[in-house]
Amino acid sequence: MDAVFVALVLFAAVGLVMAASWSATRLCVLEVEQGAVSVKSGGVAPGILSDIADVVQRPKVRRATLRISRRGGQAELRVTGDVSEAQKQQLRNVVGRVPLAKLRNARAKKA
Image (cartoon, rainbow, N blue to C red):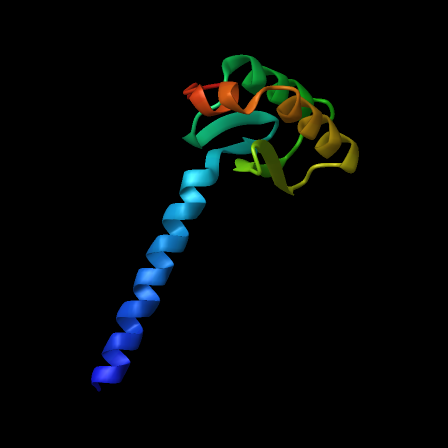
């Protein structure tokens, strides 16, 4: 019984450390619904948010999640949902053209 308890505590501790490190590298999470972008967590510079909103309008994205995180000193974009490959590339270009420090220090909450 003691060994099981110790294993559960260690498992929980490792999970907490992993969650904390992931959230420390995550800059923001954006949700797209019918072409409208909203910030679900974190923040992004208003100009970048505006550019992202433009990309998901043409053609209109029905539903998607965009996660911007820090990886190796650069911003990394992960996109899931109804986004064409061309739009994914446009979104990567939008995020990639901005210095990481500018993305990280942003705290915009609305599109």
